[in-house]
Length: 136
Image 1 (tube, rainbow, N blue to C red):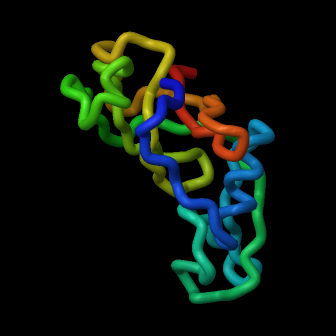
Image 2 (cartoon, rainbow, N blue to C red; image 1 turned 60 degrees about the horizontal axis):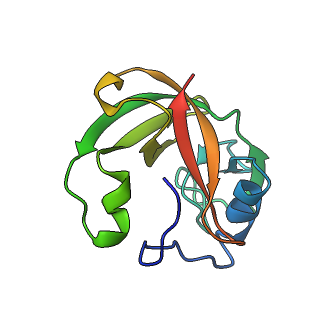
């Protein structure tokens, strides 16, 4: 998957900027609460467990497993047509949170539940490198 004009780019704002900066540097970052140590994804202002403030950023291992997935065989727009078929998956990260991403670098038909994966990054623009996952 690479960027093509017309693909949807995620917003970069005050809450998510450290996350996207990490992706640009090849590092998957997650938020951790200083009060209860809860680790969370996606970036937020408050801890989703205790509502604590002052969340810090930690480097994730990049390891995970496929929790659920689907194979997209019909592109949602012309911009995604070159990628068909592609896999959209829920990835349970080793640190606990679940994130949605694509599984790449393999035949979509070989993806299966509980498959071990690791993060890789695809630079879409100068600011955005998308975290994708490949078989571990």
